[in-house]
Figure (cartoon, rainbow, N blue to C red):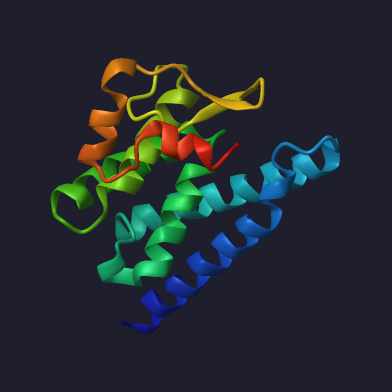
Length: 166
C-alpha cells in the first residue's frame, strides 16, 4: 500500500467512525442535531466523490476491508447526493462483477438509491417506518420474491432482518 492509499484508508475509516458517532442525530427531534448530521454526510459524500474520481471504487484490495466498508457506508448515507450514490452504485457494480466487492453491500446501496429516487426497492433492505411496533419496508418491486432475491446476495430472510429492529 502506497502512502497515499494508506492515508486514504485511514481517512475513510475515520469518516465512518464519525458517521457512527453522529448517526443517532439523523432522526433527532432537535433540528440542530439533524442539521449537523446532514452537513457531516454531505461533506463525506463530497469527499467520496473526489475519491471515486481519483481511484474508482475503493475496494478492499486497494484500501483494506475496513476502509472499503467505510466507503460503502458513506455512499449509503449520501441520501441528498443522488449523483454520488448513483456513481458509487455504478462503480460498485463493476467491482462486484470483477469479484472485488460484495453483492450484499451492493444490494443495500441499490435499494437505498432507488428509494432516494422515489422508486420501489428490490431487496427490501430499506425500512420506511414502524407501525404497531413492527418495521415497515419501503415498497418493493416484487414483494413475493424478496426473500429469494435476498438469498442470491447473502441477506437473511426479510422476517429475520426486521426482527432485529423490533
